[in-house]
Length: 342
Image 1: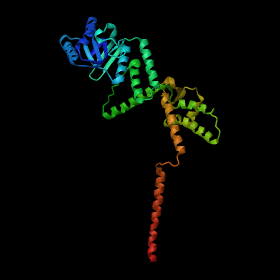
Image 2 (image 1 turned 90 degrees about the vertical axis):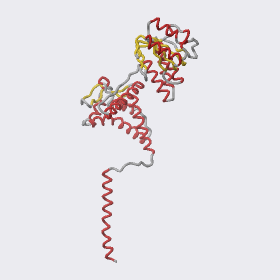
Image 3 (image 1 turned 180 degrees about the vertical axis):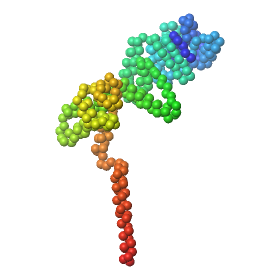
């Protein structure tokens, strides 16, 4: 079902009585606009009346179950009310009865599309100042919560309220192709989320190279600390060096050149040139770069405190070891001499 220039009735409770929705239906009919009812549920006499009126007289009305559960559903309905300029009936903070509804209490949207699984609301006519205020409240809650689940739900609400929601449909000629594309899309989405959270930096290892001068200001008190700083300095060069190696270019020359250039200038391996990475769109999410460095430092610290490390034997050493063993077994031929001594 799709409606344009539609009115929205938001109710936190279940609607069963037809008497409770007649005033809203009359308002919508007077305005000659479709009406969508979003509530915990619509059943019984109310649902039957809506179905009969839609089938027999073509009444433009639809009923949708409110998304989510418990407090999350209440909060989502409040988000809808703010985005569309309406109010939520049945809310404990709102004493207004649904039977006393006025036109100003109904939300208004430019377009709404309803399927059996999803409802897409576009161009809500709520006040921008109210939407911005609500969005800021959600951002504050996201930054203060310690629950990953709650943070994810808050981010979903913020996206619906402030940024909009997009549906990506991925296709391909085979299941393997679809799965491969899906993995790429998931990687891109995660990178985009990380970029939204903490911003972006020049890619290609350029940002890490720009961190190296900061190591020079670190005051060390012994040789071990100096070695540690030098290890970090070398590690910061490795991403850019590896990219250059993969491109078949002298890595040390590339790194030295990039270190001499301006902060946003880096090496474009695809075109074998030095460019402004931000302008070319060669970027990395700050969060990804930061966490990669932090995790690498954590693993390195763990290894330095380990008394032993279990690892695979390199293939070359394995061949040499086996050869030595076989050579020793060859000496068993001397047992024939021992037999002669008997």
